Length: 268
DNA sequence: GTCCATGTTCTTTA
DNA sequence: CTAAAGAACATGGA
Image 1: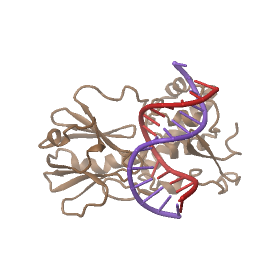
Image 2: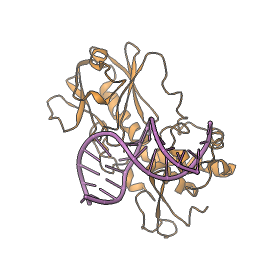
Image 3: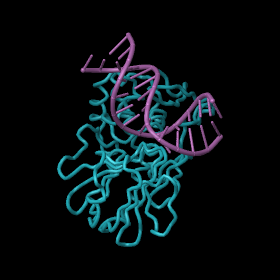
Image 4: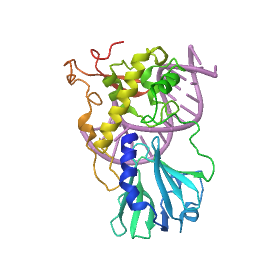
């Protein structure tokens, strides 16, 4: 589920519980969530202090006191939560870190599209990722979009172009900007790119304020549900009248993903 | 049984 | 090389 707003909310809720805490025990119930395969995470994490928890795109990046770093990706159904050690384990909990506070950090992910990815000390590990949408300038966005003839929907989904957007917030941003999902990325006029850049930020900020969208699985670091799904204007609303013009929202498939838009407000 | 799902990556085809 | 389409990964809900 998780896109930038959900991942940011997880980081914000976990940070106060994790920063400065030491990992006292590691339980890895499924080794296939770890990359590179076979890495002895317990050996690397035990007795290490967590110095930083941050977000890059959809990644939750941890920095340890020995300067080693790794990230958790939530995939489609991942949850990363802080819970008391004595709380019962839910099914599909693959990794449990016990902290010196008596709390545990738990990663569960039924579909296992997510996982733990080791970065090591030196390489930033994000050289093939696009800029952070909340920081990018319209010029930066225009430059990136100008390099591809693909449609704007699939281009914005590409993490190498911009890091952090996914299916929900691409559809919502395109609606707010009045851009048809099939418009060619490199043929958007300057004023349309400016508008798109602003609307992406607006959509993301609003969603962060609402603590992310819970469609099914998403919870924040405290296990709480998000409310941003109530703000959606097109996502998963096919057949429902558009909030601005009452035309039924349409659903098409692009790049194998459901794409929702208003045929009246988003003209080709 | 069917279809669909907030993600990523690889393969095939053009 | 580019891009589009499809499949794959694994699980569960409607």
